[in-house]
Length: 353
Image 1 (tube, one colour):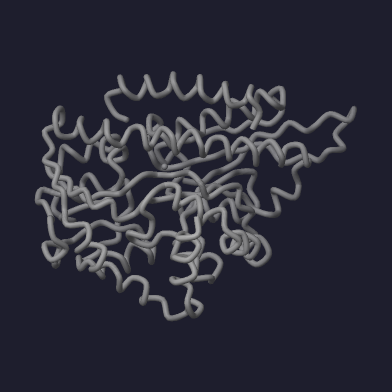
Image 2 (cartoon, one colour; image 1 turned 90 degrees about the vertical axis):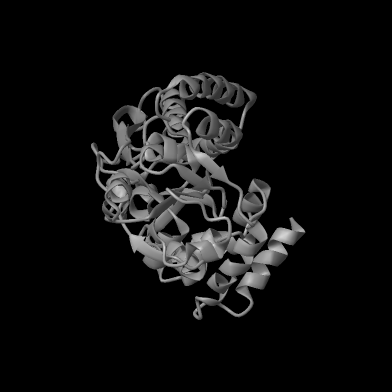
């Protein structure tokens, strides 16, 4: 990334971080308008294309703010000929809806997580990227994502499932548990109905811990906690705040069970229809946006802990992480279809990094 691009993102990051600090509240796939053109447009000009990008989180969360920076940079670099239009707060539907639309070849970019990618491709090994207590640091996350192992999985997604990965590196933050009770030991979770998405990584993790995982769309979590449909939910602190979950749960257990990542992708069909210049710009700017989101997410975590405790009246519980990690170990034996030694291979990659 050039010095000019870096400075632009730094300015954008500083102004948007200030916006978050003053906001009262701190989402994913897409639908499309406009069709992809080709490089042979009249007069030799690059085509005008609008790419829709939807997600289910708030417009004031780091995800959307980083994407705003991406959209701005893409427009600047193409003189407005390539446009990304953002639709936060589930305006285009739930994640699965948007993912299916994108896979059908729509002019759009969608979010993906390792669990859905595993389901979509039939390659269960992808679930390990969302494994509990796998990463000690964000550097560990990036070490795995930069590995030949993940590069091979990305190639397989393109060749066998029609998914072109732009990046996996949008760091969503440490995920914790919010409820009206604290869970200092994993045994305290026995039978707790905790919300999970329809994702094998989540389900297997919380069966191991051992809760009663309950599948629920994110849009239903607030009322689910309020009405007792679920006892607990798990999310990064920024998402808890943006969704006002502190109004229906007064205790956060700081498990950090996932250092969660999400990826951005489009269909191979749409990607191959783009001029090479647009492909290069999108690849570079989504990578730069990942840096913005990661920096913002890390910077907010300590700030949000203080805000939850001091301003929002939420009790923060520091659990026995070693006990939690040991309790979650059965996750790594829950996928008999994994290749022999996959977990050990991932640990070797992390240790070498």
